[in-house]
Amino acid sequence: VPDPTTGYVLDLKLLRDIIEEHIIAKVDHRHLNEDVDFLRGIIPTAENLAWAFWRILEPRIPAGTLHSIKVYESENNFVEYRGEPMDVPRYCVEHIEHEQ
Image (cartoon, rainbow, N blue to C red; front, side, top):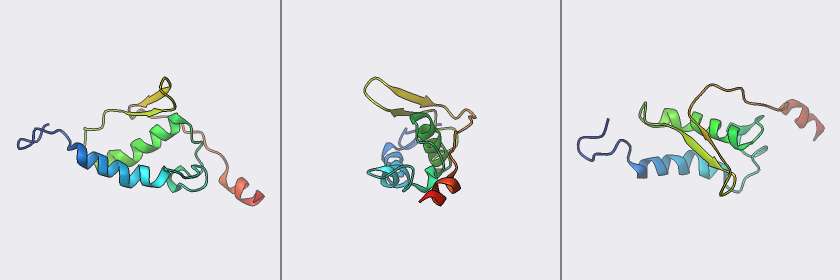
C-alpha cells in the first residue's frame, strides 16, 4: 500500500541505505567464503547469494514489499529469487578449518 503522503510503496533511499549497510558493506571486496558471516558455509553461487540477500532484506523492509532479488553475474547472466523455499548447498566449515 503506498504511503498516503509520499506515494511511495517503499522509499528507495531507505532501501538503498539498507542494502548498503547490510549487504554491500559486508560483501564488497571481501572473500565471500571466509570474510562474510552470513555466507559462512554457503557455496557463494549467484543463486545462493540471492537467497542470502533475501533473508537479510525481508525482515528489514515493510511486509509484502519485497517481490524479488536479481543477482547479475554478467550483462547477460543473472538469477532472480522470489522467496521460494530452496535447499542451499553448504560445505563443511569444520573440515576446512581443520585443514588450515
